[in-house]
Image (cartoon, rainbow, N blue to C red; front, side, top):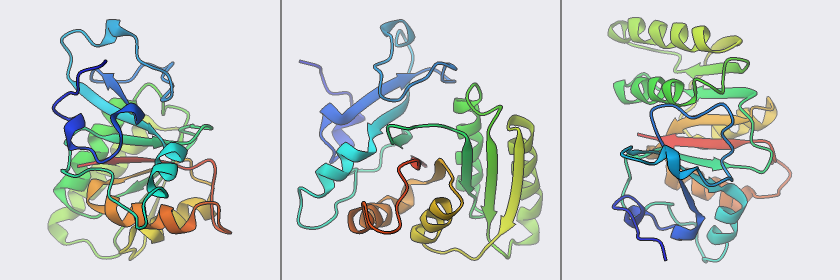
Length: 208
């Protein structure tokens, strides 16, 4: 029987659904459904939890109402992946805050070996204070320098459902967003799973 880490105690999700990955950057052979080799775990902090999205949806639907994935927000990022997981088309949710910028920088560091051939789309608020323009440009430059193709769009999206709908419509394969939206995301997934608007290609990266 595996001993729970301090981080897994923070999840509402059953521990059996969580897979741990360690190290500053994922290897280019990374597969979220496969258990990491113990060679990568020695003296390294957990850098990512991966969770099968469909098993998560089954768990969500075992309750009368959608529940957040974590009872206490965990600092370790979570990847909700579909069986067809790919980083072909990334959708970055940048909301103009320092936390959002840090989240994207950390994602690029963690996935740097997996995104060099990716197409990336960054969605930013229509209005950004002058004090944030430099940071916004730095994020665009960072993503552009680490992916094959990058586009930048201004939208006044305020709900995670807006980003999810855009991702489905434009065939994105990985939505990178904040854990602050995980409760709303759980509701979206709970109500729209296998509905008319759905994508079996879209995974989710959630972090602080």
